[in-house]
Image (cartoon, rainbow, N blue to C red; front, side, top):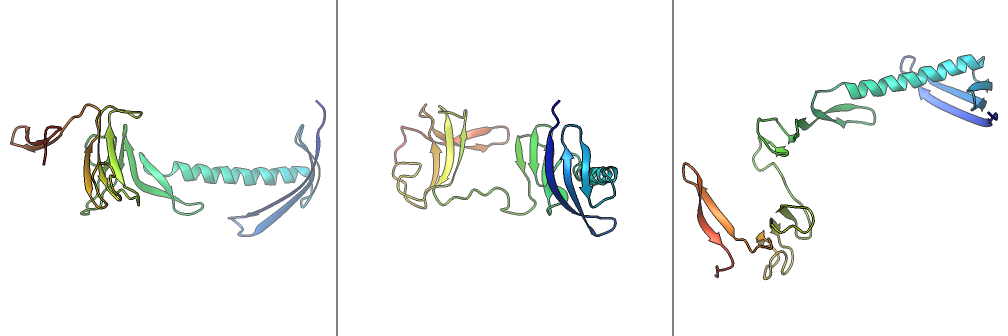
Length: 197
């Protein structure tokens, strides 16, 4: 293998946690092919230099390993600073994601808060909305809720400030209101294509 000589001026500055001081290392040249130090400055010989570099690298690896192995099982960590980790409010249980205190329930995403009116908020300056559909691309069945911020937003005839309840399904399905009667939920009111105000 052809020897590749690379002239390096390596300036490494790091804080020693144990001694609380700055160490500066300058390496003049290095042989990339076999990692044999040709010459250096800052330490007495190449062996010492390599040991110091390895110790520093090992300490960094250990710090990162400890950071990512300490925590509460199932909870997604959060960065509290450039080097600090803590436990967030987001938890995964099986295939479900929980935000807030965990409760036994079902659903892919569960938001739980003991505070009133403190769950999910959708923001947007231009007609914010929530959509539910059967598929991702050109669904045939889709419903939604929206806040109109302009004329004809979501529904033909809407004006800014209207709260819009939408059934944009291609099957011309209706909007049904139901109430639980003690044993099942029954229809109490329906709006469909035959309804007129």
